[in-house]
Amino acid sequence: MPEIHPVCTRFHAAIELIGARWTGAILRVLFTDQHRYAQIKAAIPGVSDTMLAERLRTLEADGLVERRVLPTSPVQVEYRLTTKGLDLEPVLDAVLSWSHKWIPLEDH
Amino acid sequence: MPEIHPVCTRFHAAIELIGARWTGAILRVLFTDQHRYAQIKAAIPGVSDTMLAERLRTLEADGLVERRVLPTSPVQVEYRLTTKGLDLEPVLDAVLSWSHKWIPLEDH
Image (cartoon, rainbow over all chains, first blue to last red; front, side, top):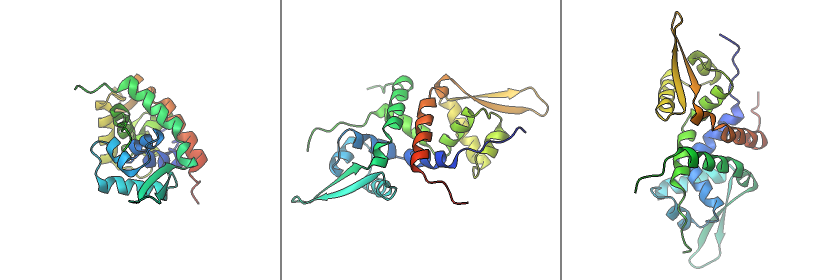
């Protein structure tokens, strides 16, 4: 067998982080300037509150997203990309381009 | 609530496809010119045969990977990226760049 070149562990960690179910969609919504919890949920058909809350917590723990509680009444919570999160723009742009070339439009 | 801009369903389908557990690593290995089943497995520490075989089948079904049986003895099976798969290069490159900036090196 020829020499083996193991896959880069940092690449692997990154793709698993970004690729976790719903995470890509959440990041994309944050890039489209939708920041409030209710907006994010409404922009992602099919995501449950449990899943969305859990993913946002993970993204916050991983330093991609910052959670802010706004002093409104009732209180509103918004999520914004950190510098680390904003740096994913070329990744999301590349996925978007690829998808528009290769993923067929859904039948309506 | 301001107008909602739903996340693009094609983007969502693409990121879920690429982001499925192990899939990114498998694609990356194929880009590094390792094509034989045994090479792919050896390059991805921790992947089980069951998982690798199942992911390769999915990638083949999705048209990203082509499976070829080589007329050797014993028979060897190799996997190569199709045009659709090769078109993911900018995505993987962007993930690699991001990971080298943001994912810390593992302690050894």
